[in-house]
Length: 341
Image (cartoon, rainbow, N blue to C red; front, side, top):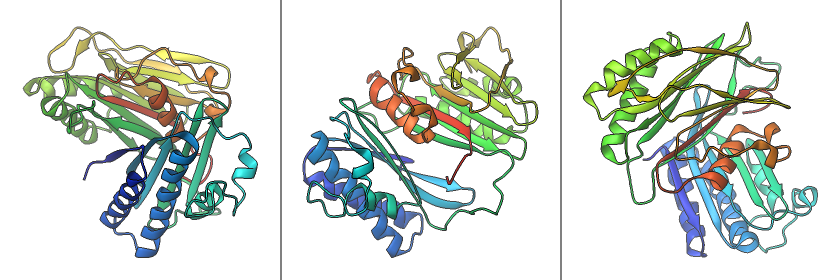
């Protein structure tokens, strides 16, 4: 089964399709039937809302882990009218559409974690995560350096294989995130990106620059890829970054945005320079990496309050509003853990 499932919801038949797909993902993760039913109801409610309130939208499903227990992430995206009274809509039992559940309150109640972002006239993004086993709650401590990570990674329309890939490696004092974009798209691009992931996982104890050097050698048997690795280091609060090709990296804070530098080239084909840069990691920092399937002109200033939302919502909204639509696309967003995953 694909890591990320995408389903357009434009007619009533697709509500049932979304429900069945969510149930299949949960059963594949070993969920008990009670939890399968919860996820199915959440997806049914989301899909029904898309039809009744936004004239359609899409649902993205992927498996997640925290830190060892599997879960399902359900992301609903639309460009509808938005929610005028979010507080009232989240009240359990509130439903204006005659949907199978009891409105957004039911989605929140059935979810292990829930988040929503809505702007009048610009649409709504909604996130639900449901875990096979409940994650640790306070006073059990979170790992000392935990990044919450959200991502969208999808092939261009018409392709089954995605030529983009991403991966995360986290240990006590550091976290590394990688994005790879195989040259072109389709199966050959997917193989190049998969090789980049393999190297990243094998050599994740090294720094970003070293990892890129190793990738360049390893990808010579493939068509090559644009690659970037960012390392967030807890103690000195820095980000080390190295990139080759059209992977964009950006560090954002409450009042600033800083682009990170990637050099021209294609790992495995031609690389003139690999250089590791160091940037400060601010309090309340947000790290975003994306392939060139996403336009670069986006700004979080256009989305008041989004910086404080779950990274999966951030990645989903950027994908919804800024995907180019003619290439594979990956968006990865990460911030320090603040609440239930």
